Image (cartoon, rainbow, N blue to C red; front, side, top):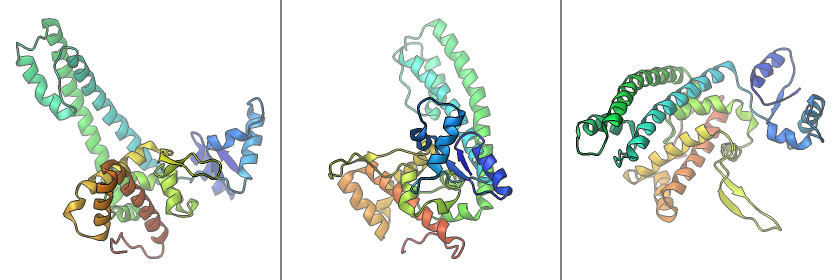
Length: 298
């Protein structure tokens, strides 16, 4: 049976699998080319059937309940962080109109707002000071609530990672921490859907985008396909590895240092993220038999 990826598709995949069916989930962008003329339910069903029979069709890896639980925690945490950032950006943007500049970061806002209110010579009007006091009080209360919520969500992720074999293997890779390990475990689903590590890296959008024609290959920047949140975590982890590469003397870090000198830190961070994705594929495919953590020498 074939299902177009949508809200609830993983739930129905599990239900139909329990009934003995072999289920395939197809991304909507791969179904759309097979829709004939006008869009309706019958045309959509026919398009899904056509797409499912293609020999080279790529399917969406199905997720179990545990993976969906972890992914839900990540979605809630990401939204909470975004709300906290939005509050700080609003205050920074309003103060910028009055010529008062605050550096990026929640900690700077918390420290500098009281100093700005005490400064009588910064050109702020009495009305705006009253508004700023109200914003700061609301910020302080909401920030405290959001900080506690983020901390509770991260504690749940720590408990999950401590009791999950796959997350423990991923944590042994340099550049993969708690958030990346749990998000990667929740997103991958069935690792057998990827033939090799490069397919997994391509699924995350970490490989060059092609614009080739007439037998002449043209490679551009990374494709940025797939899960933006997961790709961002991997690249942030890559930046951390690049920053401390000069403090270690081994083959991997020597490669990172040479790449950094030749191409710069941004490309080096993406290259490390790409390599970590391939290493994650290797660990997941071998954990059933070997269950070995990451080894730099290998």
